[in-house]
Length: 295
Image (cartoon, rainbow, N blue to C red; front, side, top):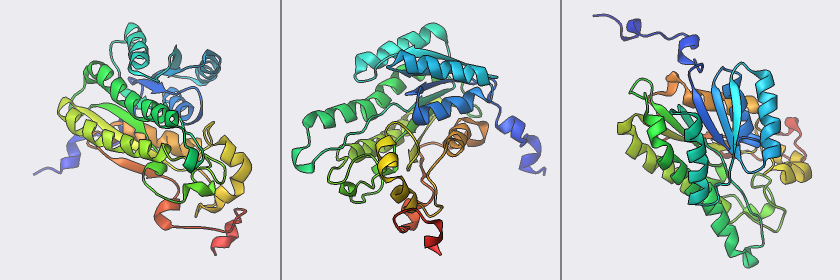
């Protein structure tokens, strides 16, 4: 009897070959989406990024194409409702007949007073953070299924947040740096929790079609969404990390590549936490982020 591994090629160059990948990254002009897009482009993939602002899209596209060796182009669109999602999908279909990876990264947050929290903050966040994932995935299923098989499945990677898992006091200003003290992101966490559950439901439905669906739950990373917190409370946020630092592009980009690679072809329905151990460890350092405070 031969060893099972003998018939397979376990080289990194085979497991992590992205030269034939075609990816769409929503919210791909800035923040986490830009990190994902860069990871794909620098590994030879064809990448489409989509968001609302053409100026940002063009700047990111130009920067990534200068890096190469992959190619980046952009689609202008607003995923605030089903019509907006379908418009982006229809434009994508004009440019490609297949899709290897869909990264549903578009999202928003809203911080406000618990006792005067606006209804539109619920509507907007569920539209962008939950509904857009559903409609983008449904509409692009034929492109993701094209050429997919059990060994090389299509991929959907949803971006949620640790805010969809943990329940720390959101009024302290510590919840990812998304709101000022006295305010909270009361619709953000529930929307991200919904995105995690939607991922698991979609994973169950699409696995028989050889489309794997997973969700990433980032902790604190630099992005436009966290700029307020990082500028005002950066040291305090870092002090909540047992490693003494927040996330960076290689952390996020590397995980996106793994979830898009042959190495993860047998994974679906997973919610992957990437927060440096801040939640699991329960670590709380001294305000100011002194790395020695954990000793």
